[in-house]
Amino acid sequence: MKRYKPYVDYQEHLLEDLKDPEEASAYLNAALEEGDRQLFLMALKNVLDAQGGMTKISDKSKINRVSLYKMLSKNGNPGFENILRLLQIAGIRFQVTPRSRRK
Image (cartoon, rainbow, N blue to C red; front, side):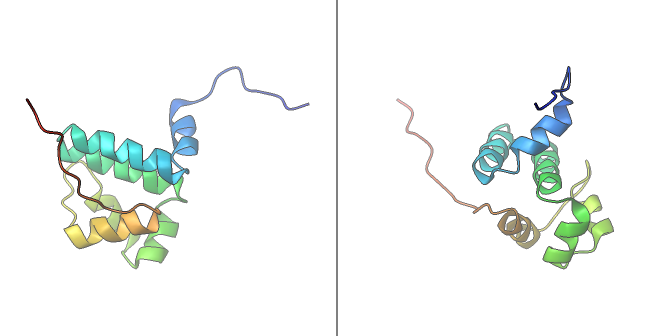
């Protein structure tokens, strides 16, 4: 019989959910809708952590691990190409869609 913990750490649960590309893309879209760059970078870092962590992502992206931490930090400013590369590694496609029309 499987034994369950009496509680689940929020970050641990979040990272488990973010392993699913559908969940990860919804999470990133919610962060984008807030219009806060720092929030989006934090969300992207969480998604990448869920995909194996910065060392694995660094190897796949050919971006230095320290540079990854800097670009995804509170004051980070990653280039568009780097964002696209990281999303691709996470199994997520960047897409632009029209806003719904307001009446």
